[in-house]
Length: 92
Image (cartoon, rainbow, N blue to C red; front, side, top):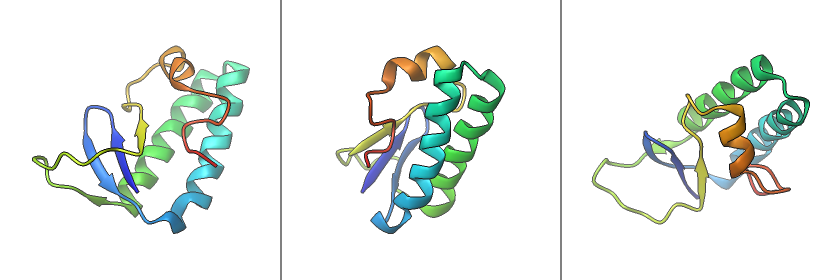
């Protein structure tokens, strides 16, 4: 699966990593619903760090269709809230 982190680029991730990423996504949803800005910031950074750590960056000139788009690290709680559907950022 190809994942885009807004403002950074694309990463290729194996499907086997989605269990770990879904846990972080669930935490992020809870923090957004609670309006927990500090928790949101921490978990968003953990989610993005996990994608970077587990994935393989694609070259900057590669333009593959992204199956998943994640917010930039400096996205606000309200901006991410607008991006979400009922399923969160990571499809289950």
